[in-house]
Amino acid sequence: MNSFSLHILAAERNFYEGDCLSLVIPITDGSYGIMSNHRNMVAAIVPGIMEYTLPDETRISACVSQGILVVADNDVKVLVDTIETPEEIDINRAKEAADEAKEAILQKQSIQEYKSAQMRIAREMNRLKLKNRNRD
Image (cartoon, rainbow, N blue to C red; front, side):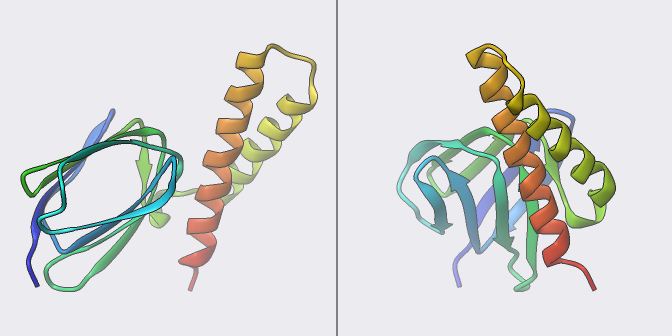
């Protein structure tokens, strides 16, 4: 199977750089799949679960925040604010953060604060989904 070059960068760290067989990433239109020789494109990444397959068939899942996907000449860049593997997620902290965001939505607030709370809920729910999916 043909591979492509994948670069996953978060604000706080370089998460992965190397060859990849496939990538599924959440964008505004839903989950989007990328394989080698994909057409050039730019897309907005939304909070969700990203999965990619390495040349040895290892599948890796991670929770991503908003960001940008750039595909150009068999080179894929994923630029996100945050990224976490299931092992890095503290389930209790994620539940508390989701509850706080839900409470913030119930408060009278500006549209900006409301949208920010919605984004926090989406992030925490995706973190919980990924953590629960990867429990032993």
